[in-house]
Amino acid sequence: MTLFLLFIGILLLAHVLGAIQATNVIAARIAEENPPEGVFVPVPGGRLHLIDLGAGHGSERLPVLLLHGATSNARDIVHGIGEDLARQRRVIAVDRPGHGWSDRPNGSRDAATAAQAKLVMAALDTHGIDRFIVVGHSLAGSLATLLAVEHKDRVAGLVVLAGATHPWPGGINWYYRLAALPALGRLFVHTVMTPVGSWGLKKAVEDSFRPGKAPADYVRKASAALVLRPNEFRWNGQDVAALKACLMVQSLRYHRITVPTAIIADPADHVVSTSIHAEALHRQVQGSRLVLVPGGGHQIHYTAKQVVLEEIGRVAQAADELHSMRQAAQ
Image 1 (cartoon, rainbow, N blue to C red):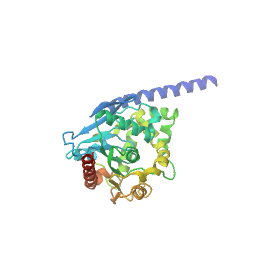
Image 2: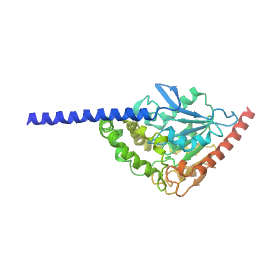
Image 3: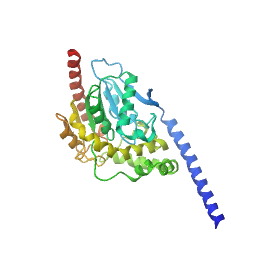
Image 4: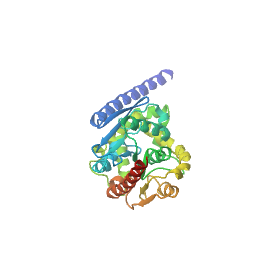
């Protein structure tokens, strides 16, 4: 019996080691096929990857900071609206800590929105960005709103796209919970998630665009496969697992947001509830503009691109005018 159990143990170990080796090969191929497009900016303990577009526009127009959601990276939002915005003003898109090509200097501690806000602001400081308009999609709605609360001297305008901003009833998907676990999560992403992830990624993309369809070239242009690398998927799970607790605290402070604000969502968004998040945020932020786009789905910066660009333009113009008045008064 002992020899039999030993034999089974050896087989299981061989299987795990083989799966880890296969995962490393797949992850290396994904990285090679999706190289960084921007610049690396040092932050305490590591560096963040930024995509900086339209830097030639004059300083009279404030730059726009783009923040991507969960299970994605900066190229998602750049491909969706960033390249269009860069025709009018400077655009900086950040790979959030642990995503795309950005480091995760403090591991699981960087899952908190407050920790990510500190790292993003450190990168902007190093990169020479002072005042800006912030646009946050999905999970990054939490980060964008927190920046607007805590950095009133820097954030001149706020746009939230299908954003997660408030605590919600219930939990999160099982694979996020599993990936976030310290030991089992590491084993899960290194033996199961990456090898079978291509199927799951395709389904996730389809769901996020529903009721519409994703562009045929979306996965390639958005470098969506980067999230299948084991460490990034684990960190992504940690972000989602930590989000609700962060929102329970920060959502009590949204009434402090005073900058021009637009909130855009599909009333039937099945990923982030519009009634729980967008409508609640609109009630808290005095003077905010709530724009509902039926049929826009969750990837609203693709499916309702023109509406999103117009609303960002509206907020940006108001922010520019207030910024000019502020400078004249100094």
